[in-house]
Image 1: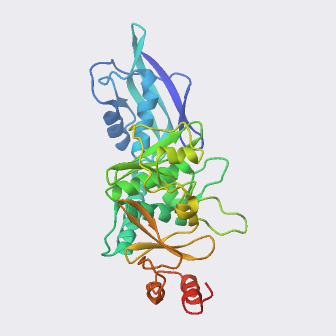
Image 2 (image 1 turned 180 degrees about the vertical axis):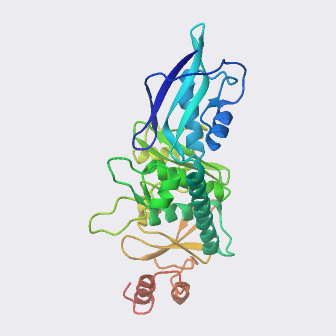
Image 3 (image 1 turned 120 degrees about the horizontal axis):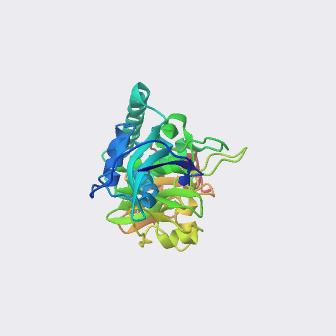
Length: 356
């Protein structure tokens, strides 16, 4: 029986594996239990020793399986990025027998953190329900809301050392790196009843998400749609990386990415050939109003968008009710207390004074 220690090094977004010196102990390997399920149970319960002797898990697979558990379960924010393990070797094959995780939180501190994490997610989802009210909405509407909520309310952690990388710390401090954005978006999507997973690219040193909308998988990268604000600039919420296909992400320079679940994203319905007529015209948070989204494009004009199963329908400038014509009814549509006064001023200038 032999022992080893591994350190899970946090780079910009994910964990890398480095071998180190040995630690004591463990048991013999055997049959075919699910190592991911065993690890999840042990990490959830904060066990100091997790017995994998029945899983026949090769040492070479431990890193991949361990990471897949952490990347699939944002609630494991209390698990530290390092662990030790023991293994047996037979006929040149090494099999893990026990794993010895490390934890950043345990006991009462973990209980309090879990309560905060759970309550904060619930509050965000409750606020979303209030925003939509009784209006019919698509799964794409839910994705857009959660995307804009995180990009608008949270910021990228620019600290060189020990940046926030987990969902709990991200929610607590209001800042984090891409892994924190992706894990939090993952938790919120699942809380809203959507399927979602983490996507990673070692080559890009980056993480984002896949989300399933109407049975089809798409990319969503909240982090890069939330650029670090300039010294005298305003916070931006972009939409270029929202509900894109694999090809659409490649067009934006994304490369060598993978998802542990093996999804492919082939549907370009939410993309357009010209960014100026698609998500690219919006650099601020969109507001849901009357069954559609309202936003101001980069020229300062008010534009309405409707997400439907056929894709994103972007109306002409000023057509707030999306009926195909510019008329006084568009001005009335803007008298929603949730919409900025600047939008009403623009509409009055265009529709009443003819200055638009």
